[in-house]
Length: 368
Image (cartoon, rainbow, N blue to C red; front, side, top):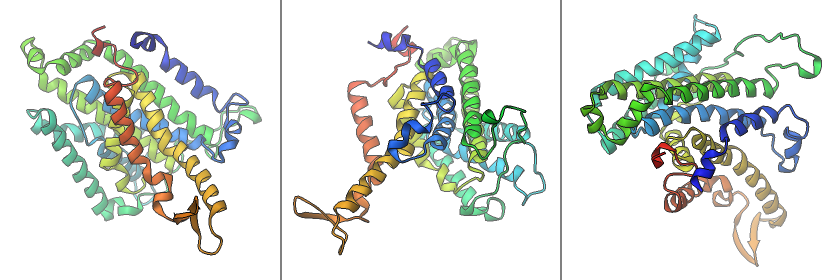
């Protein structure tokens, strides 16, 4: 069964479906009218989180280092972009410069923070990276003179002016979600291609050796410290790139709390659910986890609130089932979104019980 799943070109199918969605009649948002939600922008955000998850997969899936602070470098990329872009600062650099600064800045910071703790392994390394992530998050939140605190830096203007000379029916404007949609998708495809080639290279094979047995890799003459730092730098750099694209798509850096431990652990859940070390599995995990969080839960909430409002007592707002009052329409436990973390936990328990290697296990992990 696993061999059959791994033979399916999941990544090519995903890319083709993603490109076709906003362009082919019948596949765009008209096909989702029954949901009552406009999901195009949500898909754009999911592409960005896919880049973040692929960066974490380099550290966890390829090099075998449990990292719990990837969300902080996601935020560093976003705030570097904000500082170099918004009118409050004198820089106002172009998009390419911001992208390079966010990517390289996040990678360099990750190396500086990780170099002193490379001797730590397993859970100890994970706890240190969790601490790094929380320190960076609180730093971003408390440096209000630089980061604007919880308000975030805004507005961030579109990456560049579009004047492609296309026919009227194909004209893309930054106000059209399709422009940011393909903007994020292009970066995701580029990252997939780069990681595919990297995994087949000498460095990629060295990372696998490090993941399987660090002592054996060192005895074979591999420089374990350099390999670890390389994986951490690449993972953080991709997280910074995702943060840069996120800031441009959102037109601001958002609240620093959006880059805390929660996003790190949810991103790790994507890897566990889809398949650690498998790029196709990572994409599948992101689609399931962030798709559930950003699309499905909102749709279910909307439909549920409609039903509750229709069945509630007009005078008191109490909702009754079989004659018993179960709460008010404003009760938090009648809001489906409030239960999403419980659903994540249940899904992970089921996956770890029946498919501990994920839905799409890595071929190398199976000895192929």
